[in-house]
Length: 235
Image (cartoon, rainbow, N blue to C red; front, side, top):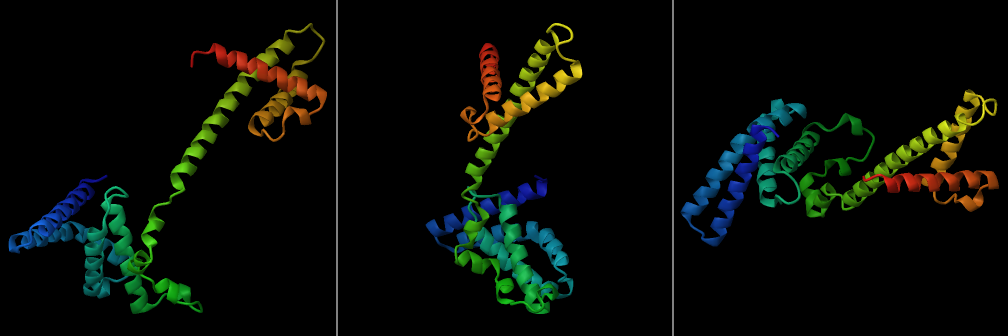
């Protein structure tokens, strides 16, 4: 995170503290402190506002864009929850939503020609009023990430176990009496057996009782070898 973004984070926390002090002890001095804090926050956010104003093609409506962005900034600071996101992320959504809504009001959107405009005209504020801020936080994200991480680790562990077993199996077959199997045929056979074993490890719905006798024997032997090797390793 850049120094400017860090400064913006500190400024919004100072504004929150000033507002808290004003609520605890209303007075002219406390209100002035809130105004100074917001002015500092606005000054730090000004380059960001100018950037989004250009991005949304509103340079010729700069005053309108500046006013809309100031409203978005004020609302973002008022509703900001530090436990959910960084302010730089949250305020970006607010500013962009307001400027997009302003652009649609002023220019319309050629991409929406022939389509209903009502949904596109909704500002982020309207979404928040209707509970839209919950959309920023995906309640399933943590569980989905943990599942994906667990699946990824399991897949890597299986790949390593099968590769080690395949190497050991290949060596054992090649040590058999000469003429029993050519190296090329051994390689093909071991690759097929490794693919079979990996499928059994990854897809438990195709258990060994659904396999033929020969394949079931290969899988059971592979599982026993892997368990023995895994138990012998300290990690």
